[in-house]
Image (cartoon, rainbow over all chains, first blue to last red; front, side):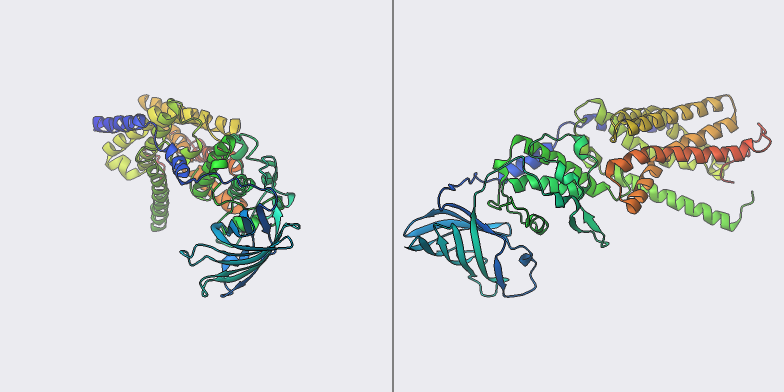
Length: 283
Length: 225
């Protein structure tokens, strides 16, 4: 009997010793696989990003959660007297468009189409004022039954520059991040203002005592600095009022610095740990 | 102490509660099967995972603890002690072996790298030393045929073994009520989890033996009945 139990222990011991490297890297690898090429575009003159948060939308069905976010970005890659090429980003999804142009007195009248293959896409009709660097117009969905039938917008050109030192405004120190299942509010703490995960390499001690909500916000702020257009409704809602935030890309992975990648990995670990352990019978 | 139905129900509930917690501990253990150095708790211990001794100590600790918990609790049954003495002997052997050679030393090693800084590191290392010590003392008492001494020190030893459960239970309760920061609560339960157990068992031992006339031959003095 003693021997049997002893052997059980020995076997467990050897199993424990046998573990070596495993899938630490697979997760990162997947993210790298998903990345697309860097899209830094020419922002001179009329080229660049046009953005506003006073977009007006006319939905076909009034109850639609996507209406919570009103951010719309139009990127003008190329425009001349005859044609235009660009991209629009809304709610974390992007679509290229091409179209025809008529120019009169410094005002481009643009009629442009997004790919018809996706019935969530639509057709643009807008004026681009070369001098004021503004865009006014409308977007109409191809699908008359889609949730968002029409968007009216007024956009202003915003020069996008990446600034690793910029951080969230002070009001984020006590902003509501969301509500848990029992209805209690999840609040951010002032850590989210002081911890910048883009310009400092964080250590375990910097993040180990943070709430999950703070961790998530600090990590996502890295992406926000690069102009990431979040699909997450929560992040769109939170960042809507941030004056430096311009969503310009749906994939910024290639632009992340080495510090940022390391910090994202570290923070993500503590987020997962908090998610699985914090309110449970566990360490 | 007489055995009344009420008392039996009470013991039954305690047993069920204990089994529930043991099951919880088993599910925690199962998170690491198959052996995974990047699972669950280890997700935030990656800075130490490349030290050769850390993962070894960690897995020894995780897997031996289950033996400790299951083997330890059987020792307090009067029926097992008196009518199935062989079971007492063998599960006692499992408890002592798992504690002295596996769980306590490995607990000391991972305690050195515990989360929450020096405060919780001291707590876990001290816990490991005391647990090891109490268990060894208890066996030495047994060797000298000092049954009461054996019982007393084993009670202390098991009170510390139970910290695996009480620590997590405290954490669960504190988080549910106060919503503290994760490492703040970690430091707190690192102490609360076992010091309180030890205080309770000392009070019990005092009331049970020191409070009255001690008879060294009184082998019938038992924990549960």
